[in-house]
Image (cartoon, rainbow, N blue to C red; front, side, top):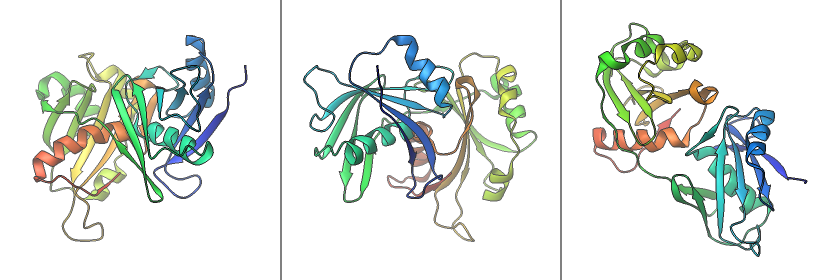
Amino acid sequence: MQIPVFTVDAFTNRPFFGNPAAVCLLENDLDEDLHQKIAMEMKLSETAFIRKLHPEDDFARSSCFGLRWFTPANEVPLCGHATLAAAAVLFLVQKNKNSVLTFVTLSGELRARQVEDHIVLDLPLYLTYPQVLQEVEELIKAAVGDMVVQDLRYSPGTKKLLVRLSDAYERSVLEELQVSAQCFLSAEKTGKVKGLILTLKGNSSGKHKGYDFYSRYFAPWYGVLEDPVTGSAHAVLSSYWSEQLGKKEMLVQK
């Protein structure tokens, strides 16, 4: 069996920037174990598998497909940048003429639409809830040391822990923070955390003014030490910061 595989740099218009994902087009069903073996060989944070839902479907003409995502370690329920990459392959390589594509996934139906020369994704919005520090104190220590944590939230829908650093910190502090994500595996004792988000409120002045918030994302539980641009994390961040800032549209930097 021959499987077309594409490498797509998502969230950028420049080669070798953004967040790369592999995209596989499946004409026929694939043995379950081969999904993971291919993802391991690709060695990217995510490999997306687009599959036809019906024998008569066509990658250039149909508007609805199945979509799964695998890290080198296991399958994940949602991946934003690999979804964007999958849509790009269908729209730009397969020349699919539909204005909207629907992907049937573990997170429900996701839609990607062409808007001029951009692709816009509709992702789920995941709520966060206050998290007791004592339960995850060792993990927080491993992530940020003695830095001041202003807020701590947990998203049960994604198993992500959101750590908001003090507003007193500048963006450079988050950017230059040395994180040993591999240590998270032994520091996380609850068994409920599968991703850690560090986030910081944006500045209204200075070099990086205009951004509403900044973030970094780590998922060693899925074999990804740090993901450079993460749609699934922003499905959590958007919910949190929209509530905090009272805004529905935000400009962010990762």
